[in-house]
Length: 290
Image 1 (cartoon, rainbow, N blue to C red):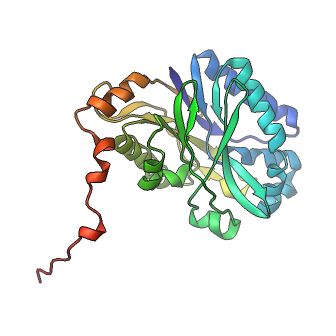
Image 2: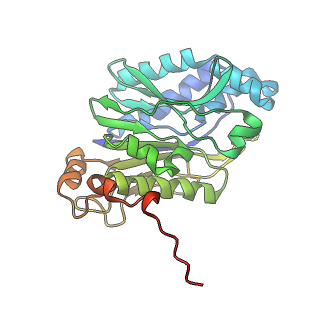
């Protein structure tokens, strides 16, 4: 199958219709190229605050509430597009407010009308304060018509035990939003490391460009990237495809689930199977050589 990772610029909308037109065009483009799985980035939903006007955008808490109230319409639109084009979509994540708590949620939409979501687990410093976003479990693996999928939102991809808990997934989907080049590389290195450890394919999407209306996403660096384990059936670098830095658009790669299953069972290395053979801190000795 073909997967598509977005390098997604945020826009200013004066109406819901304008947002619907943008999203419809992006989905139609990827589906037209034969993609069956589309991955949009972390906090791409922040552009929805612009429908509420500049005052909403200027107040991060107000923007979070405004976007949270739109999720019913956002979900309905994504499900409509998934069904119309016969694709699975990881929608751009954004704030959801439940019982007074803000979480960062990414939804997965299937063409059969089914929908699931994954909340981010570990918050960055800025998400914690001043934004007040909180992590929420559980971690999930989604069994779909195109394989077993898991979502690891941005900073989460830098923590190997989380991906280990999702080890049954054949594709690890990594929506990201990073405000500096080093942030992009932290997430990319994490995504590539998780593909190595889990002998899976990771799909990284990014916000790109400037969006001064909303402080949380005012500057973003990134590009699309699709990575696999450097083993039989995959490129020696592990890079199946990558875009160009801060250039909007889709990055595509063909992904063969049989190749993933092959390296897990018969690869030259068996990182997934050998995980439990690692030493842990219970066997650590401190050696004084002074």
